[in-house]
Image (tube, rainbow, N blue to C red; front, side, top):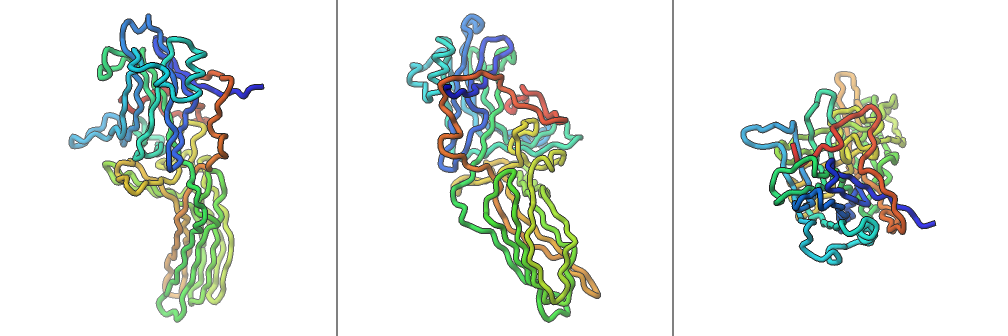
Length: 388
């Protein structure tokens, strides 16, 4: 049998415009980004002589949709590009870039028109901070959207009945280089102790994949006169909102608190396993996600990779991860906390060649809609980052 591929569709309420796309997630492979392509099916009679446009946008929003502090709006279009689809400005053959588009044009008929966008090099990936129960109407996110609409010109106010909005995601795959092994080591000296405490913290590799356990190696040599107790290891997610606010959120997304101790004059070598996954953090306010929480296929946000020539502020939100080792050094007169950390990446694995985007001989159409996480509602499916 010929392989089947799902093609997602969304139709405007007045049936004048419909969008068909083969993907909802578009991958940044570091050296290139998957282009955004699809087709638009129109009803010329319902359009009543209006033109049809398609727009790709990347939007940063922070706070409430209606917030305006000292004349500074907390929403910015990081990227916005609109193209006219109908009437055609070029021949269809010149506008058709992919095999999928050609098959859709053949299947849907003469009133179908292709569109194609390429992402600029400096755009961030999709990321959103998880809202809390009291954060109704609030949002902190970098979001992408494809929007099709009709009008006499592209700048006129959009009629919601004759427009289609599709929230898409730009996600990151892990780079190829996996040779670096994160390692940190330090010695700590204490008052009235002739010898120090030596601590080494290392990971098995630099990049871990979403859902994969993080293996942590701890090596403690306690030559001091202090007793080491209350050892804990955690994965810390660090989120920097670098546009407008420069807020910083540090959330522990996986943690193991132990009863391990290292009395003076002894040592400890131990492996710990941590599981930084969304299922353990889906109710926690401020945790960064790969897109909005209502998407069932969302995970914790991937580590941000920023090219050297790109300004960090343009990225809107930057996410990084580290493993943090904490312990208490207790003495006769006083106790103090000792800590050590190593950075690492948490990302999506790069798929085998040819398996990410299938070019099918047969297609199945499904409504463009993501499933909801159980018990979580975050906005309407038609909610648009570019309108509010």
